[in-house]
Length: 383
Image (tube, rainbow, N blue to C red; front, side, top):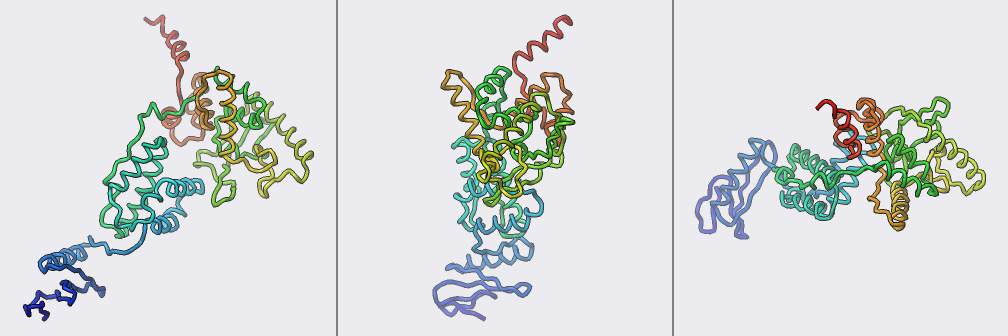
């Protein structure tokens, strides 16, 4: 039996410490648990609450694990074998760029809903796209949901926050009109990425698929382009990885414009290799890439963006009010032109490599006003 400083008997399991605190202690399934408080009644309540939580599987044992440490465990043990290399890069990038600086050093159990909300709000204030916010939400949800299942936290803070998205029309990726395509191609003719731009506009291939395309996938005789890999940059090195989804593996017919541009480009590339000799710095395993840097190295996606921006800037300096251009805009433009030309949506879905038709029609197809007018004329006589 324990006594307090005045010699009064204490309840079972509670002891008085010489530092002035009451100590509540009990053992469950071979493990010891303790609570402290200066007030006897509070100490007793804490002890009873802890007993209840432990016996009903609600208790989360406190530890000093940080969010950074848990993210490493979550990625290695729960995601590494489930997702593709490209997705790993996306998840790691989202965590390191948008999450780590806010809560990375915090104890996992100390994160509250307001901390998560601050991450979402910061992304919105700084102009990040809806897709970026969605990826950050996916990473946070996965991390903390798994932590809750493992009883490392007693409550999921992500469930207490709400991501804020931009109005869809503000965030919607624009496509180029026929006139804008013609103008852009005219200004891009002297660019080293002109063949890539033409291929992108006439096939709808993704940036990584274009930069990972190899000459053995270009069949000039049958006029097919086979898409079966994508160029990725992971852990400071390039790899030729899988396409985004299994549906992304596909064959795309070569239109005349693409055929002519690639035929000419292949000839020029071979001549350049011979001319540069040892200065043609082909990276091992990437010797057969179609689109490369000026010295044969795999093409960096940021370098591609820089060159596209250079072309657009040149047009604006010439007095044209031209929109901001991204590599993905070429894909949207291709999809829009296909539908306007009367292509069946199911065929377009396969050409783009989508698993769902709704994704093709809702996100990638944009109808301009001229096309609407022409379509309306078709039903004029019906009224």
